[in-house]
Amino acid sequence: MPLQLDIITPERNLLSEAVDSVTVPGAGGELGILPGHTPLISQLQTGVLSYAQGPTTKRLHVSGGFVEVRDDRVSVLADLAERPEEIDAARARLAREHAEKTLSAFSGTEEDFERARAELERSMVRIQLAAEDHSTLAR
Amino acid sequence: MANLLDLRRRIKSVKNTQQITKAMKMLSAVNLRRAQERVLSARPFAAKMTEVLTELSGYADESYHHPLLDARGDSRYLLVLITADKGLAGGFNANLIKAAQAFLKEHDGKSVELLAVGRKGRDFYRRRSVEIVGEYIGLTGKGRITYAEAVEVAEDVMRRFRDDETLDKVFIIYNEFRSVLQQRVVVEQILPVARAEEETEGQTPQAETHIEYIYEQPPAEIFGKLLPRLIETQIFRALLESIASEQGARMTAMDAASKNAGELIDKLTLNMNRIRQAAITTEIIEVVSGSAAAQS
Image 1 (cartoon, rainbow over the protein chains, first blue to last red):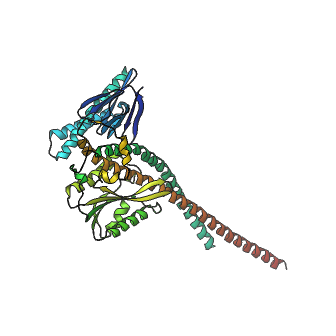
Image 2: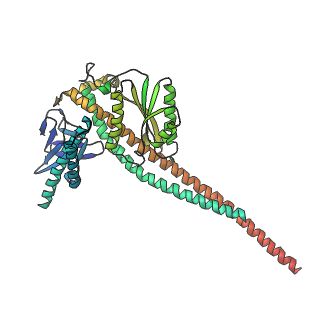
């Protein structure tokens, strides 16, 4: 496993493992990272980060922050990161409804709008990941 | 004998107090362990953040402007004072307030406003001639804090700085966690963010290990996005350190209190036994001399 992947949030170190490849949700689109990648710094957007270890691929929810690639080390500094099994699907669905409602009848400041939009994005990624996690368990 | 009764009552009340201090000590020990872990797990993020920021700051030269870098005058300060909500933690709050008082004295003649995190700091300055512009009570009292809560404080601070051009500098006072027995009061300037030239003065050899990164976004843009996050992490760290320190200080204080209570109980018990014995002796003498008198 030639790539060292570290996922760090302000509250915890979620993951530190050797992997084969990583795909991160960069601000300018998905970024695939393989061993030997040139040094890179990019901002992240809310989305799904996936990494491959041999035949298995795992997916995580990350939101905000940035990624640094250097010497086959991928450091993801996210505002928020969680594994699918940590996601509370019911809560995410509630959050989505709430965010949608806020956005559809909007009357606050730009900042509030931005916040609601970010929350909507996060909840949607969460719901998606939680659903996937569920289906793999069922199989 | 009234005296004996008094002593018994006294011992009982000290025992009760000891039970409370013991329980508080135990509670603090548990909270402390958790708080310590959190301080440790927050460090890698802050370290990496600083590393990347240093890397990026090379791209942010004189011509680059960001509201959080905006160096202004030197007459109006905002002081963020992080204290505990509760007392019974030895010199924890007193040291912070002492440092704040020293700060005020040092910057006498400048206008200083206070943002109080923690009840103790607010209560102290509420009765004094320092304007409290904001307060966060109940944030540190739970013995833990989430990043989101720290962001709230950070955003408040940044908004004040951004929106008010007459606010020149923002300082923060908190207790840094050294060890369970040791805290250190730290006074730091957090805004405006010091420019890299000032920070890395005297350690230019670092430049040799400079790596050419590909930047997906313009470096200055990433830098600008990271600056607020730097403030957030700084405040988050300060809060975590403060919580760990508070628990450590309380644990030490309560341990000392339990010990003192134990000593007091021993002393009182000894005293009580002496009096009890004296009473018994007197009674025996009375009985013996009474029967001797009856026999003769």
